[in-house]
View 1: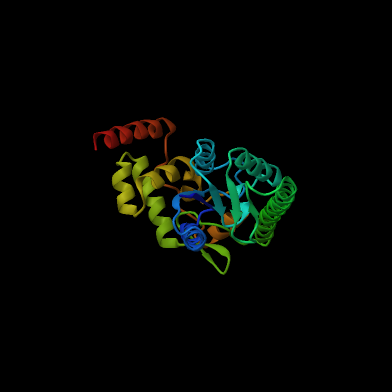
View 2: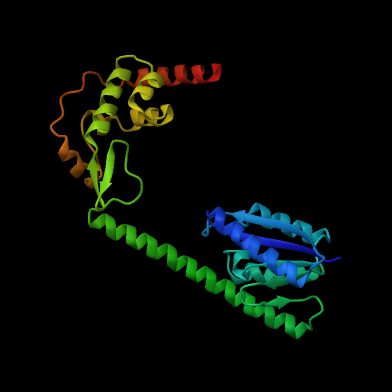
Length: 265
């Protein structure tokens, strides 16, 4: 009986990972109808320079003689390190009497192939890996370039801070939420429980603690280093002087108290 290992690697989309596995399973049903199947799937960053946990587990299974054929959606999914790592994997598989098949372009490295055929397949696979790595690098650069251009144009990229919203690409204050956070900070500075205040404000206690410890100036005084945030704050300026402000020693005591309360829960 043939022992088949399916390997899928995606960045973050679970649905895409499942789609890959389903397509590989359909292929095995046609090509190896009586095979046993083991599934290996990594969900990691496309720019991650380390092989995933499942990739390493796959190599161990190959070394233990548990795999006859490895089938991947495309060989570039094996690694983002480029052709060198893919070549190493293919050589590793051959040394352990394991064939490798690529579903996307139909490449097949078979243990029964001649040395010339194996060398040609490895060369093509290595080229595919290098091209995939270059494509990934270019993609990251294009994304970063787009983000930089948006920032230069004063546009906001990513999630807005609590109490703000993005309108037509630009950051704007949500006055109701912003002032609610500000009032909450004044209450905590006067000694009220951070957890209770966070609940009243409508944000998670951990989020409110981070805002209180790291962004008090933004809410209590309307001050920001980021020009885009500073521009958005024009909608709520001038602000009245805060009724109370965080005390560094008090912050530390509050954190310890909150931690004790969480431990009791």
